[in-house]
Image 1: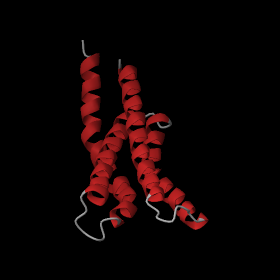
Image 2: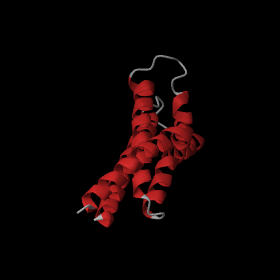
Image 3: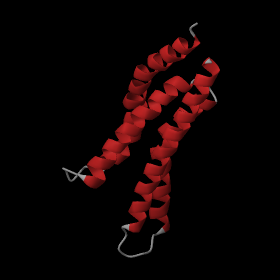
Length: 139
């Protein structure tokens, strides 16, 4: 049963990480579409590719932890924490910005996901998922 719980947690982690990547791909595509000239220079395109990779780095790490390290419980919490924070940043930058410097949050969100919100999500979910897996295994 614990193996089944790990498989479910790994699948959920992959799904949440895919949603995070889709969110960041949408943000990058929005930056491309909002250009008034209609043409994108190579430097701007490369910046967007680098920005997309930087934004997706936490999700790549959580997938690595879930699949390669076979620790899906903490990776699931990291993915949940990162996705919630990224959704909040997306809202505060694109939907309801309150400051002229709101877009800077996009640059620093991956760092905050790696050092605060991912580990915080893991600290909350890891014991909960472990407890649920043990309860299902109890006679």
